[in-house]
Image 1 (cartoon, one colour):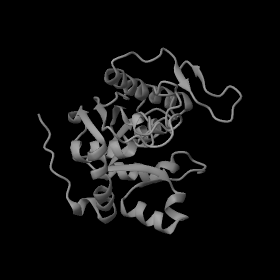
Image 2: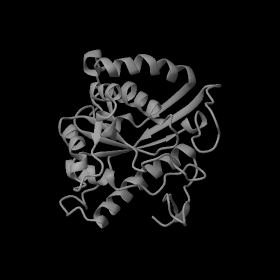
Image 3: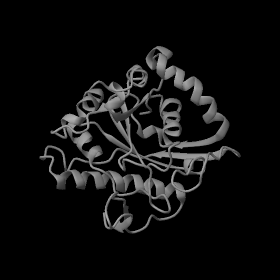
Image 4: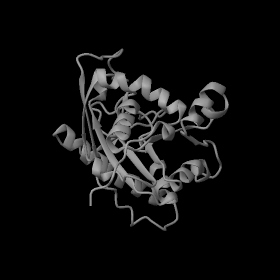
Length: 254
């Protein structure tokens, strides 16, 4: 059965989110040619986690555009809690746009995600980049991810919809080319897939092994979507970027 999707109202967006849309939507229209697929896999309502690969600092604009105008949901991004408390203006904007604080340096890792879990239970659509940073892989393939996406999914019970994206790295290639490359308009492709089956991990203690296995399931689903978008297979080994280590930027098995 086809899901009924209605246009998001300004009242639902709120003042700060509406202001961001007014500023950023014309830029997205002017400098990108979006190709959107898989919208049917994103539920029209209810809590859901969209887990995407991260290839550029332009990704949040491109992905928020896909979520708002494609799936007719409002993307809520996660950010460190200090942004909400240490800078009054930034905090006001983040709270007004109902973004999600992550309480880092919390003794209990699960408590760090308490606001995100509550938001999912309230029916929000949360966007997360499981890698935690823009891909350092030389060819921009998905890297080995942190386990926060698995912890959030297993704590909340919300479905995880994988999203592959490709194209925004041509606008802003964070670690290689300098500056913005806005013209000619760049094709940006986004593809959502069916929710990842995490049933094998549900109800189990959130040990490191369980979280790693669930995270790898999510990343494999994302990588398959990126392969489809790029029309080529990903490397057999997953790039593992581990800062501040002597063996930094090496490929290891996932």
